[in-house]
Image (cartoon, rainbow, N blue to C red; front, side, top):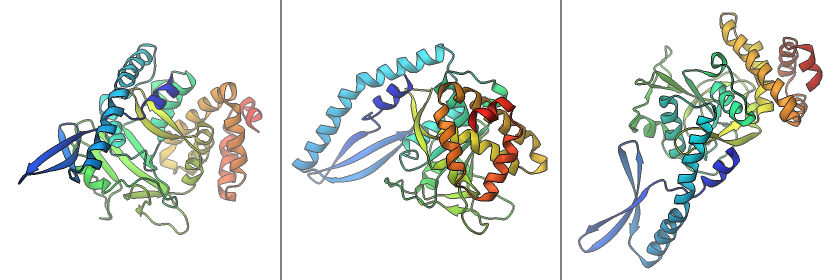
Length: 319
């Protein structure tokens, strides 16, 4: 059903064409709405060619409307069947990011939000102690060039109805994090760190400052579309679940001593994913382990330590 949701989302109406009449001439704009705030993008003076294109797009929207209503029903069915759903605040932010083309432009949803989505993928209802968070983490590989142009994302986030504001840091550096005050949700942008330590880093695709993390590239090399169970289905991108599980083991070993509780959560998420992937998608784990052998020695040594915290039968299953 998730695959059907992702496929049907193509061609969904995301705005409206608006005309203005000035001194006997007609000019067209494309209007999008983020909550109650509306933004208009100038298209140009009316011409026969423009009207043909507008009419074709409107016709595609009309054809897509039944599929849109069907997706709403499917989301309701998944929710009623025990599917894992985001909080209202999380859904608002993820919908905003989708509308701003973040996921079409190379953004990838990672962290516990992605782990929650894997539960729906695998038909598993995770314990909320390991699948709930007040953070939304978006990763973008600064070395990969995206195919879409997203514009000034930081300004669009700040000017949205959600009023996402940058979080000031002690070093007075440009922020890579935003706060949704009303729902107490923290949105952070991350990117792989190559070479010398430095942060924040301007990303290539999203054109936004992001916190650099070592070895994040392993997580972003293989991604796949996924659906957040909210509204009519919010289309996002997540890492391959096999890579996510292996990466979590590495992350757990990279945590500082005072982050022991986060490291414990990392290991539990990795173990739960490995258990279910061995049953449903074992190839994902085997391919992830092959890819891990091509990573730097530091990554491999930390992975080896992380694996030693797993039950012996799971280690045997993926080695």
